[in-house]
Length: 416
Ligand code: FAD
Ligand code: PYC
Image 1 (tube, rainbow, N blue to C red):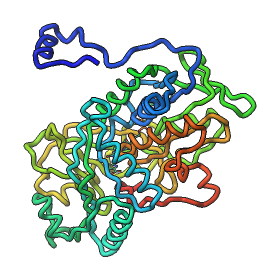
Image 2: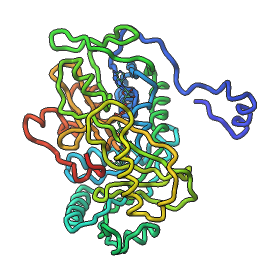
Image 3: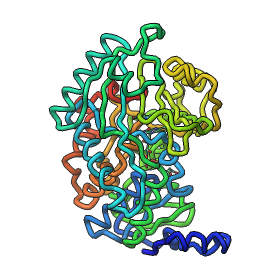
Image 4: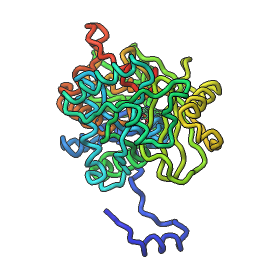
């Protein structure tokens, strides 16, 4: 793997940045692969990487209709935490957290994982009871967490209005010190470069338009670049999962909604942790560039437009200014949206389907970025072995028939 010194950077600048080594190849699709992954976001790329790295399955293609990481992976607000309520989801997100803690070294790519801590605020007695319960559950699962009172929150975030004068006074918070943020596109690029180096074909501008299914067994996919054969296909297409499922005659219990985010003009460092309020309903952190990274809940309607409506932006900023009056005159620089596919129990689907060899990894709603390494790791093991990994097994589609739902609406952080 080529590395560049400071001198190398200057040399490339003088050559107008024209001869940088590409991070991954641009291969021509082969007629067939051992495994096809549909979707070149973080989850799909991580799946391909772990298939090659941990299971020796390198004859793998990732088919991406646009460019790698151009979906929700590069549209999210990068919050990483593992403080979920139920054992099944705590195990999944904590599995991811352990991967995050070594990811830059694993990929030899700086994903800028910054464990600056996440606060989930409580503004009512019921919020505080729920926080207490969730932190207790986290600690029983070996996940770090503390319950803070308003003074504890104020000492961590001096610029927030924690006074009793606030319209919805802060009563306390859950605090996960190991939680934080990471650079989202670096996660996609790091997995892409590492997967490519192991022989995975990353096929951009390659849209899956249908599935080839014979006698209940997947045979391959139709794409805009021709048919590609495989007896194992994993769909990791986030907000487009219902569309893909429909092509296979499947009906997933998903709703697709826009979710928006905004960044402000850059400021000097003022906020060194992540603050989320599900009650006032907004969340905020400050990026390394200095922008305030801001978001709130989904737009209530269904749709596939990667944008959103103005009332949601207005509500989001009202919530932020409510908590941080000091930001009332900060100007917003950019706003964007992604499509999130939400499940009735606010938990993902990692599952086989009734079509043999066809798997889905979707339904992460507003919170899948944090799961990227763990999701890829357990999904790869499931595809490699033909049996769902024990951490993934509770997230089967079957739970919507059996009733074994895992309700994580309270821990979702962002209402959906
Ligand atoms: P994606 O990155 O969307 O990848 C799916 C890919 O599939 C896309 O690139 C798409 O082009 C491709 N695709 C779709 N259809 C086809 C097809 N037919 N053929 C080929 N390719 C196809 N999560 C957190 O944990 N923390 C956060 O702070 C957070 N903030 C968010 C903020 C916003 C505004 C949004 C929109 C989401 C946020 N999320 C957050 C959620 C998180 O972004 C997603 O859950 C996660 O990134 C999903 O990753 P993915 O790899 O599954 O999806
Ligand atoms: O799941 O923590 C989260 C989250 C924050 C912002 C969007 N999702």
